[in-house]
Length: 138
Ligand code: ATP
Ligand code: MG
Image (cartoon, rainbow, N blue to C red; front, side):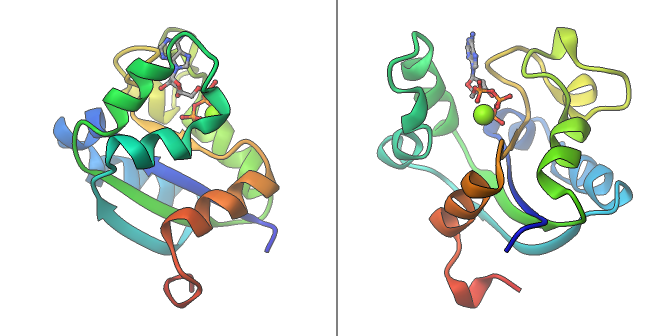
């Protein structure tokens, strides 16, 4: 299952009404949505998802933020999906994000940066399976 990546539209972007705008940018960049749902992560689930960052100083803040409100989770398909999607979302800190990227347009800070994008094929598969059963992946 290469050529797939996983994304979340984070609580800040959801609250600010940017879900539609972000999905439009994703479609315009040539990604096909093969799974999608709106959900609200508990603190426990957000902590599990970002467990890789457990030792980082911003972990508590990240878990609190990601469980603050609804998100949209999706699996996206495209040739070279992981790398191309990281380019489309832009740098973690929106101050460093290039023009034309989702974070440049919609992120407000390094913590509240509008979208998540998987950083490897392996993590894309793990993260997609975290949210979607096989029956929900098309
Ligand atoms: P994501 O994994 O959400 O796509 P990323 O890969 O660009 O983001 P990571 O280093 O994996 O960045 O960090 C995960 C998330 O933790 C960031 O997207 C951001 O929400 C938060 N974060 C990262 N660094 C900081 C920081 N210095 N201060 C506050 N929050 C941070
Ligand atoms: Mg990351």
